[in-house]
Amino acid sequence: MFEALSSPVRRKILAYLAHADLTAGEIAARFEISKPAVSQHLSVLENAGLVASEKKGQFVHYSLVADALANTLNGYVQEVCPVSRPLKKESAALASKSAPPTSD
Image (cartoon, rainbow, N blue to C red; front, top):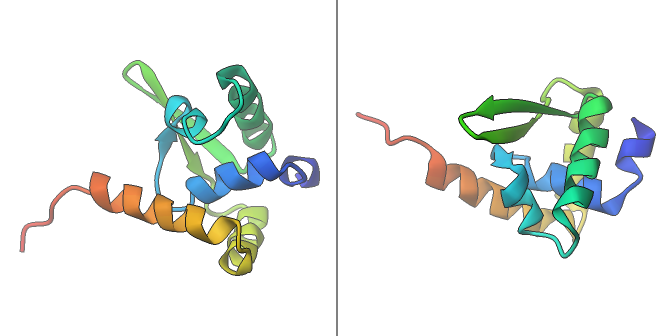
C-alpha cells in the first residue's frame, strides 16, 4: 500500500477520484503520460485495494475504495496539500455535473 502511495501520479489519481468515478481515458486526459502508463498506475492502486474498477458498457470506471484506511488518511492529507486541493475541487465539480437531478 505504501508503494502505491509513493508515486505522485498515483496520489493525484486518488485526488481526481475523491468525488467522482472516472474512466481510464478521463484520468489519462489529465496527465502528460501515456495511457498505458496510466493503466499501470491504476493497476497498482487497484492491487493495493485503494481503487475499484467496474465495467459499464465499453468503459471501465474507477472509484475510490472508501473504507480503505490509506484512502482515509490520504484524503486528510489532500485537504492540506497545495497540489491535491485543486484536484479534489475538480473532482467535486465533475461529481456535481454527473449527479442526477433531484425531484423535490
